[in-house]
Every structure is written in structure tokens, then in C-alpha cells.
Image 1 (cartoon, rainbow over the protein chains, first blue to last red):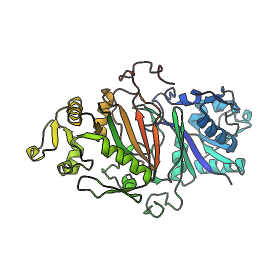
Image 2 (image 1 turned 60 degrees about the vertical axis):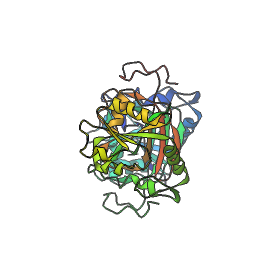
Image 3 (image 1 turned 45 degrees about the vertical axis):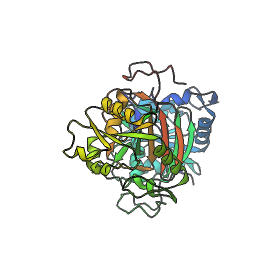
Image 4 (image 1 turned 180 degrees about the vertical axis):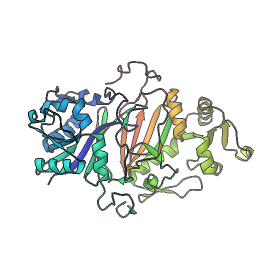
Length: 209
Length: 209
């Protein structure tokens, strides 16, 4: 059974975009090197440093389905039904778009838990990636994330859209991360602490060492 | 001439304390290992992992003066005039406390730029550490920081006091960090980009690769 993980590119001050959804300051690492990593969608290939290429190849090889929110789906027009990772997409939404039938690789599901369950079914033994910050935060609160992966970019935006807004059940504690230093992003993967009360009411100290 | 750097312990969602100034979730790394690093103040020694001990020893050996804000001074009662790093402290404040004369190793200065200048004078060839988040943010906006150092703790607080609030002149761009993976904290030191317009109005792309 695969893992359910989130992966976001984030500024040092915790933002995933500027206040206008701009990502110019953040996504430079996708084009900061000489190693080409092809994608399966309409985007140009990634061109990254070797360490970041390893991270991307692992994501590409391991991910069997993605979950995103309706806002990201609308911003990207659902990646034209061809996500760059090559995996089917499950969108959390109350109201599927009118052209849903013309998007055979996209599923529309009402509710975060239901969407992750649907993505797990699609992914089988592969991993499920959560690609929207708001969905990741809700999944974390629900105890449905196994890992949180962050590509941490060496910039302070000063203002922007936070990765982890409106967490209802913090603090959320993680294991020490797997660290991959890349060019223009430090890749950090945190396993969510097992046996923690996701409500945050437990002592949480049992596994702290 | 030494460097002017900030060092803060920060959660993954960018907080340096919980909403009530609590640091229980953040400062565990100071007591998460077997290597004793003595301090010069009234605090017990740090007990950390070997990698974190190296980071702390470097800070202890290299820091010739500290700058902090009035709020931190009040919370700690000025560390009893004996900061754990063993260095003199410069406090940014409009109104020195009534007992200032009884604190020979503490200087009270009106203004962030003036405080950093005073600390540079005290430190000589050694480094100046900025120990308050609000002072660090202002120093960054003023172009007075050479490096930003963060001990990144594997926890999401959900709410708390942000490290980089009220930045007036973002985005601030840094070089890729020196990364030291420690137990219960990943130590990241970022050099502030040289030749950048601290107002953020420059293109900022010249040095991006």
C-alpha cells in the first residue's frame, strides 16, 4: 500500500504563492539546472540540478494518483486532463464542471477524505500525492497524511498565500526530515508522527526522541 | 570584520513561539541529545546531538555581541546581564529600564541600525547575532543582515508568532543554505544575496544562478 503525501514548493516564510497566485519567486528551481526530467503533460520538461532530479524522478515514478482542490483545478484548467506527473487527478469539489465527461483521467469527489479514498483506489500500491495546500492542511487535520514534503525555497516573500492556513488540529509533529539539498530549493520530507492524536490533545511526547 | 546574522528556532509554518510566547514545541532540540554544550549564563547546558553541538559551538565561539528587542529583554529580564552565549547584549528600546546602570554588559540603544552599529563596535572582528524576530525583520529590510540562520523544527504549530512579520521590503532572496541536519531541528544558514536592492524593486535575477 502506498503512502499519502503532500508536496509543495514553499518560501522560507511559509508561502506557496504571492498574494496574486504568482509563483515566479518560488518555482525557479524547476529550471535551475542542466538535468532534464521529462513530464507527461503539456509543460516543458524540468531542468534541474542532479539532486533535485532525483527527487522529481522519485515523485514521477512513485505517484499513482493526485488529489487537488477546486481552485488549483480551475487555475490550471485541470492540466488539460494530463497532469505533468502522468497520474490521474481527483478533485475535491461540491460541483463538478460541466465538461467533466470530457476529462476521463479526472475524478470529481465531494470531500477531502472521500477524495483521498478514491485516489488510493486509483493508485493501488503506488503513492497518492496531495497537490493543494488547503487539501493538505485538511488531510493533516484528519490524520490522513503519511508524509509532508516541502521544497523550501531561499526567499522571504513577506506576504502571500500560506501553505498551512487554518489548521484546526495543531500542533502537528513530524519525524526529523529526509533532507536533499538542491539548487534553489532544499527538499525536506517529514513523516507524520505515528500514534499522535491528530487533535493535538495527546501529550505527543512518547515518540519525541 | 564579522558578520551580522540572525538565528531563530522556527516551526515549519514559520512561527518562533505559540500565541502565548510558549516555546515548548520548538526548543526541544536544545535538550534532545547526549552532547553537553555549556553556556555562560544561568541556563543549564545544552544537551544536543553531535551535529547540533557543532552549530552551537560555532555560534558560541564566533559571536561577539547580540542585538535584541525590548520585548525579549523584558521576557528574559535581560538574561540577568549574562546571556547564555557569553556576549554583551544591545537592546533596541526608546526607554532604557530604570536599573540600566546595574547591567554593565547590556547597552540600550534607540533604533535598529544604531543598535547593530553599536554591537559591531562591541564585537570587533567577531560576529553580531540578532536574537529577536522583529529586529531581524527590520534589519533585513534595512539591508543590514549578512545571513539568516534558522533551526527548523519538525512541527506545525497552526498558529503563533511569526518569525518574519511585517516585512516592508520583500521579497528577500538568499543563496542556497548551508544545511546541518540535527535531531529535532534542521539547521539552515542562508547568506543574504549581495547586490540585491533591499527594496525588492530590482530584477533580482542577476545572481539567481
